[in-house]
Length: 500
Image 1: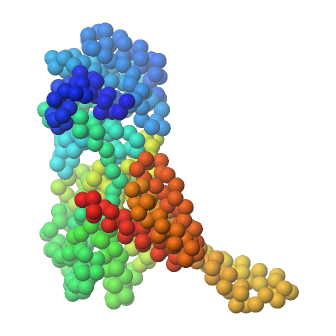
Image 2: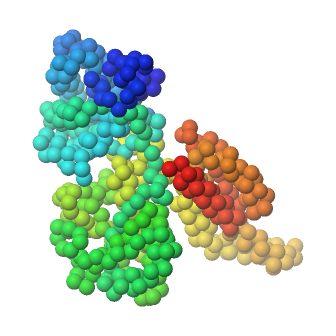
Image 3: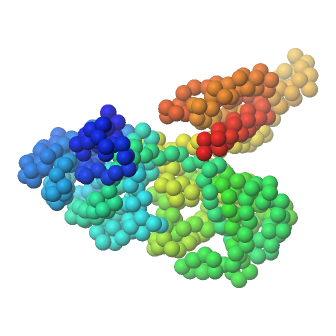
């Protein structure tokens, strides 16, 4: 039974009713759904508590709901249901009693997941996060709206604190949802992976004014990457403690995330070559309330970015109390030109993920943990770049092995040109994969077969865990593999545009 059908039954609506034909109309009553991990209470103990509370408050149904089990997370989901509009207070009181009884048994600070429809997430978060900050301030509870999880239609809101604080936060969320209203479309809505080619962004960077002037004079960048470049004064951003000098300014790049990433990579290269300054830092302007997300628990997120960027130094220049959504902070990137390029495009992607609800997690196991490596990008270009780097970084090792191999094989009198050719072919091997929409496969299948024959590339297509996606595995000659990847990206882009 789908989540939509489940909640239609809860609301007492039949599939043939005028209500369902309208679609957008709000449900009179919606179930209040939760999940709690087994480290706080066992399923048997929870089941007993739910039954006792149901009888105490005369609510239609308070029971375990296996349908809302969060994937790969050890715990129990439960729902509080009553179609009577006058029973909302009784249901709220029942929530409070359940939390109190769980707290008494666990004897520790609670962590509860409230489960809300994907379509209502923006209501709970509010414009620029103002609503959720208000709830935190009013209730003294800690709230996090987690990233969406594959194959799980509800969004998890983690609430941490004393049972009374958690209950007050839940009451405010219920009030918001009641005032807004919830429709079947809110339950049917699914989070989608971030598509860098469709997401529009306005990325801001801090540079010396003379560097900004040089960049703005290179207007061919705008045409080449389909972006718009703007120079702005340092007063265009709001930093709590001014960390900018008078001879610095802001460069803003507008366009799709993909085009902005390509443009900034080229800009870093041009500035490095023109000014011959490998040591200059890249400073990215970011909303200050994203600082803790980018750093991650115990620095796990920023360490992951450093590893992916092959050792770039990344530092968030932010005060610890910079939670004001109206303030900005800086992310400083240092290292070689390649390090800075790689780290910058990764950080820009993370910022956009934070703006759009966060990257999609593969499993609930990674809720509130190091999610950077857990989501599947629609096109895994970074995977290709990492494989390419591994091939390049290990050339010296392979050369040494080749020399020793040549010595051992001297008696076989193998030609120098032959061994050199073999070393070259080994160095140019690439193995990667791309996740594409299933609907694209029939359109490109014949061309992929031809590529496989002509370019010395092996191409294998297999279904993904996600029903509407397929995995295209590519291995072989680097140039041939890149040609295949460029073809797939181009065709996927055309398909996306045609569906708009």
